[in-house]
Amino acid sequence: MTRSLSLRQTIETEIVDGRLAIGSRLDETELAERFGVSRTPIREALLQLAMTGLVEIKPRRGAIVSAPDPELLVAMFETMAEIEASCGRLAARRLIAADETALKQALAACAAAAADEDPETYYQENYVFHTVIYRACRNNFLCEQARLLHRRLTPFRRMQLRARHRLGQSLAEHEAIVAAIVAGDEIAASDRLRAHVIVQGDRFSDLVANLRSISDAA
Figure (cartoon, rainbow, N blue to C red):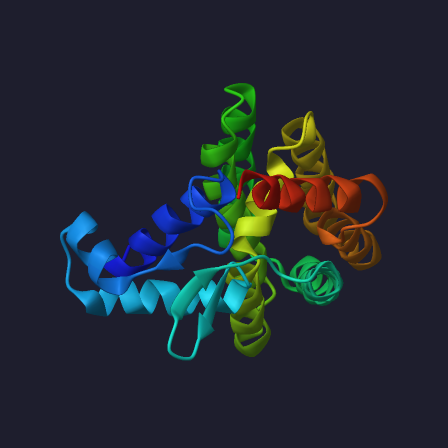
């Protein structure tokens, strides 16, 4: 893990937890002194967070903690759902033995984290699970686009996993996705991945509630 990515995750967690309030200025020099690094990795981390909407870079004011517009967030999740559906469909068609093994190992790691009721570890294993599917689609361009958007949605996918009972639901969805891909069922794999990623109904309400809780902490 690069230094800027590690810093991004730390700052992201503090925003999601409400320790860095919306409207707060993120001073590069202060953050560099706090973390004992130069301003370069701090600047890189803030630029990465700006892509998610958790940070806004303003002229003459620098980086400010913010929250993305819910409509934009829904649009990004809709796009992510369609990209992942395509990855799942192609993975079901093109699955090779090595990818099947990696997929089952990633599922087992998710199951272990869910059993421990550890959402942060589950999120890390969840990321591995999805990247295995991206790789298994055997389309490098699609795989890269999926990775880019997944990274952009990182904080909000983490928020989703904090909802009550979501770990168990997510794991059950993972199991159904793996079963479809291993069976070579392209339609089921596509449909299950789309439903797994999309935010609507209660899941959208939960996500918006979590975003509001960040604002209320300000």
